[in-house]
Image (cartoon, rainbow, N blue to C red):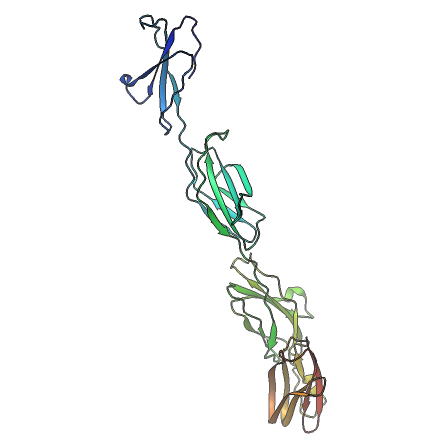
Length: 358
């Protein structure tokens, strides 16, 4: 508190009280200068009156009247924010929230990667009670703190809050080992390795000769599905991606396109030259798993043999008095990479096809 100095003053008499108190509650003090500092006042935004009178001698007989009272209000103690939480946590961003305090002028925020010794980022002058942080690293844990600033010049600040933590999302993993089996004239079963913790998968497939807008898009919650109806004797392509949340924000890239052909609608008879056209081996090339399929309308004896490049028999199967659709899934994933021959022999015909193990 200050006032103009009086040249003839010996001292000054100062008195003050809370405005809510009666006139008999004045607190008095004597000072020799024209300023006075009050301490021990309430920190809960309390209003005070104060006055000053001139003392012209030491007896106190020759004093002026007190000045008109002046009013001031103490600033409330700056309160540490509460209600902290983190929302909208994505791969590279998160929103930090806290409860709004009407006595706060603005907020200061700081955050760092958990385990770092120093607070890497300090953000001052935040208005409002939330802030979205961008350019974060996926699959990383961050610590953050917030404090209140109760004056425009940042002279009145609260303590920092306790440390809050959050972890950004881990990128969704692209499915591995996509494959097909049980391919018929009008259907096929698609499969890929299951990924723990995913929400689902997005599957896309289409006739390779058709326009892009004819593609089929499906959302699945399992890593195996049968697709139908398909067109006989048609080549299809398909791919799949994993989805780690229902919104589709955290999703993997698609697998490479996989190809297969449905069986021809025409039936062949053992011994007919169309056996070669009706024999399907897919996928080809393959990582080891593939399917062999054909259709016979007449009863016949079939020998199915797989040999390696050196003529060694890898698999042999006899089908006696067989008629109908033959489908078999073969696993050569434990055999060396290279070229293998699939041979089918009947009483009066022989066909072979090559399969490449990558």
